Image 1 (cartoon, rainbow, N blue to C red):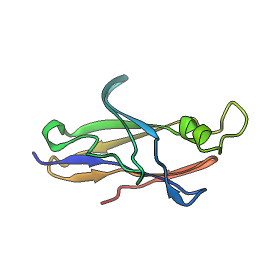
Image 2: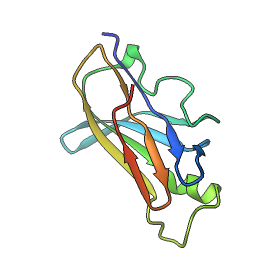
Image 3: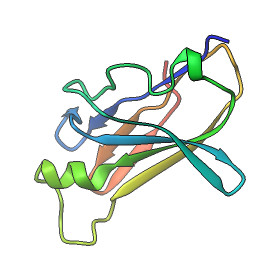
Amino acid sequence: MSGYLTTHVLDTAKGCPAAGLKIALYRVSGNSHHKIAETVTNEDGRTDSPILPAGDFKTGTYELVFFAGDYLRASGQAGDDPLFLDEVPLRFGMSDADAHYHVPLLLSPFGYSTYRGS
């Protein structure tokens, strides 16, 4: 098995990488969530290594939680509490044990999008 998972975050409101944004990764089984990783984005908005490296990779359902509110507050983009976007969960499945899955987040204070990247 050589699959792995990477992610990155781009701040589309500022047009730059989202540095210093905390991300947690959970394995999901039914209603159960098990946290398996936590990291913070670097200056390029990426993690320094895969958030789920090949040695730990298993197919299944996962959820990335992006702590957008903390980042938006720190970058001066937060509005009044409660924020429109605070924690952004993305649930997705990985079915190919040998694939590289890349799940980025494009973020602004009032919207986000994602896709399966390469």
